[in-house]
Image 1 (cartoon, rainbow, N blue to C red):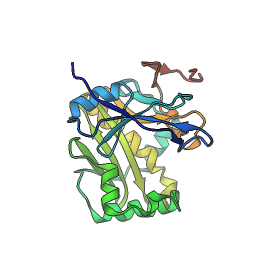
Image 2 (cartoon, one colour):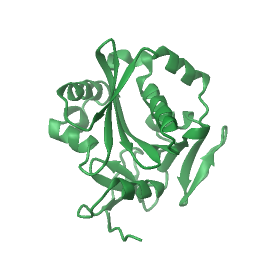
Image 3 (cartoon, rainbow, N blue to C red):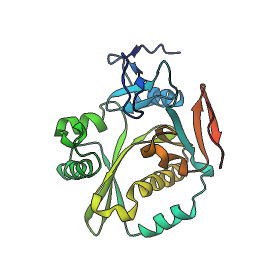
Length: 239
């Protein structure tokens, strides 16, 4: 057994729910992390942002639910099959988590289109890498291209039993291709081909519109009261 030191942040305005106060537990930055330890922390509802591992720990709210897909029994919808067919000519290339200028330029275009005016839209090169990569995790930068044109990049962590979807950004001129959905479907297929058990999708909030896409992948599990429970089709998660 390993004792992992945790740090509780002060309360601050929630980034997702207006009017709510949020707190997070962070693994102490001096603690030595590895993919194996991170895999265990994922099982307990933690998440990576850059080199930091955190978990929501709010006093008066438990709306943030970690979710994951059991890939062996994933059932694509008609919408998913259409998305896969629409992108059948895309090529995917798995690269190490190194800085590439063309990735960064695509990230800037994506942020300017989706999050104009936010701090992320003005990220420097070092801030961009600090957000997506880490020195201790086995991370892929996956390029999706069409006829040599870079359309999207998915940041994916590779663990012993799972993949973890960190972030995806894409050319906003190609919204019609549903590249965010395609990136998740590609990761599910990769996990299946590698005989992994899970694809982790981070946190889901019922009342946050930009998180709603996560529950379109079925079956899906949510970490509720320290137990992974299946979210059945047509049901609401009750906390």
